[in-house]
Length: 147
Ligand code: FES
Image (cartoon, rainbow, N blue to C red; front, side, top):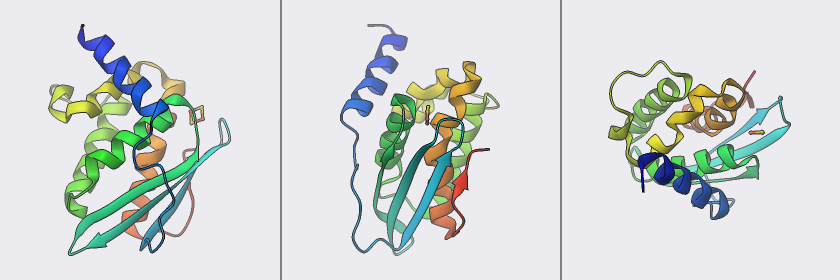
């Protein structure tokens, strides 16, 4: 199996069986994201304990790319410090918008989303959950809109 097929399989798997796809009782951080291009919305929930993301989840409706991106994101930031998650947000933003340098493979499974940068209409699908997580971690109360 070549890398492209592997990445495709990761996206299909996370769209079909999204990880951490659930609302969260007792979340201390909640943010909503909205993509006006398609009308898709998602909410990101997080619990922070001792500066670490003790739990993170999402709900919402979106395309395969946005669902897979949100699912991969929750897996990737679970247990990380808020600062580490913010670094990953910046890395993923660069990857998805085509401004990253270096080998995307260093991002592990998240590199499966690297191909999105070649499809400008899909970039917002993939960045929606990350912007929403960022807003949740910052405690911003204004809904995130991708445009
Ligand atoms: Fe709506 Fe992708 S088409 S988030």
